[in-house]
Length: 169
Image 1 (cartoon, rainbow, N blue to C red):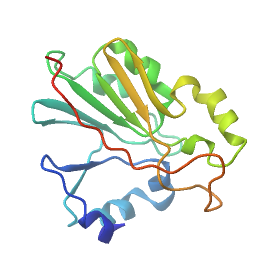
Image 2 (image 1 turned 60 degrees about the vertical axis):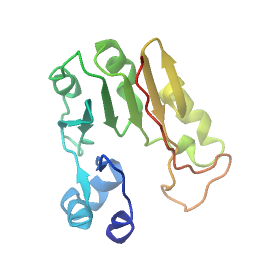
Image 3 (image 1 turned 90 degrees about the horizontal axis):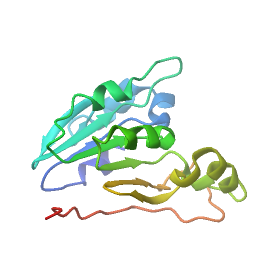
Image 4 (image 1 turned 30 degrees about the vertical axis):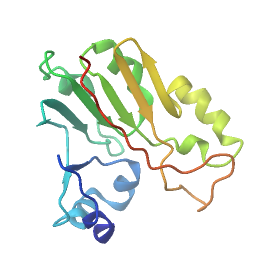
């Protein structure tokens, strides 16, 4: 992870949040793997990046409570805001706050193996994979590049997604 992360670059920085796989590995080990890579690990925090509030919320460890809304409520509503939150299970609640413009998630792998995509769709509904738009709110759930369990995919393609953000005006 560390060597590959050193190759990542972006003019405004590279940001990372923990997901469930990092909790299995151990967050301290994951953090250590990213040290000296230039990747900024965000843990329940808000950073101003080029006039945009970037919100990075940590994936909760087993038994840990996560108060996502209290973090979101710290946002300046006059600034555009992007939320990085690993699992798309709270997407509708995030949308209803009216404080997030764009939410980025992963976790689902779109089921990874057919027919698990149907189970994922039943759990996460319209947020299971891909783009969702409703008014000024947009979310995107990436199917990612990795796997859980067996290292293969059947019925979906891994992805690295690139977004170009533009001013609303």
